[in-house]
Amino acid sequence: QQPVQSPQAVILREGEDAVINCSSSKALYSVHWYRQKHGEAPVFLMILLKGGEQKGHEKISASFNEKKQQSSLYLTASQLSYSGTYFCGTEEEYGNKLVFGAGTILRVKS
Amino acid sequence: NAGVTQTPKFQVLKTGQSMTLQCAQDMNHEYMSWYRQDPGMGLRLIHYSVGAGITDQGEVPNGYNVSRSTTEDFPLRLLSAAPSQTSVYFCASSFKRLAGAYEQYFGPGTRLTVT
Image (cartoon, rainbow over all chains, first blue to last red; front, side, top):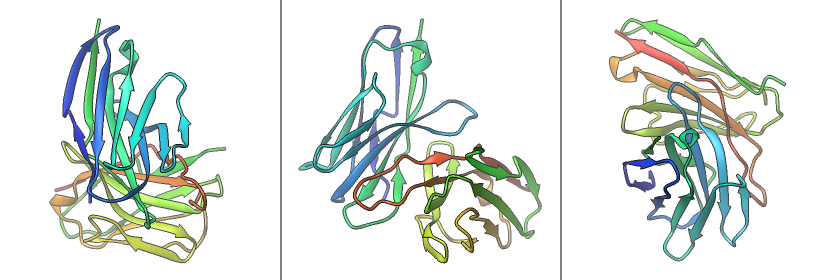
């Protein structure tokens, strides 16, 4: 079952902050975040594991609320290069597959 | 180290034709998967494999077959192409989760059009 992402799209000016949310109805083991530029493959940003471990990007932060099965990606002081589509992917507690949400389109304007 | 490679990059098929999308990785990853990407629907999992000889269905497996005879290769077969299978197909690989989760490495994608 696909996780639900919000918002669907957001437009920012350079320097502004944004938060992208991801929620699941399943008990999760991990949440992944990826960014995709137009015409390119998705690129890894971060993994958050049940229990608090995080792996990933130094300039991007995220949280994982295990009780609510929700994750948020925080983009601070946005740059033009942050533009793209952001996907969250979730792995269930007792599963092997990584399932992605529909994506959030982020556009940063100068 | 080529990473994840996919061939072809572009393909046009007629309804009813069959074909195989190729995917290979040289990182010794156990886990490989296929996704399709359609506008507004994100990345939807078609099939995945946790190792050679082991495959399983994802969210949208109908109309597709896979096999995994080696660690490196994970081909996706379209048995009888339909216009609804027009999409961009991504192959991805990663290490297999034992006590952690691992980043997925995506291939460049195959853009398939079925007329």
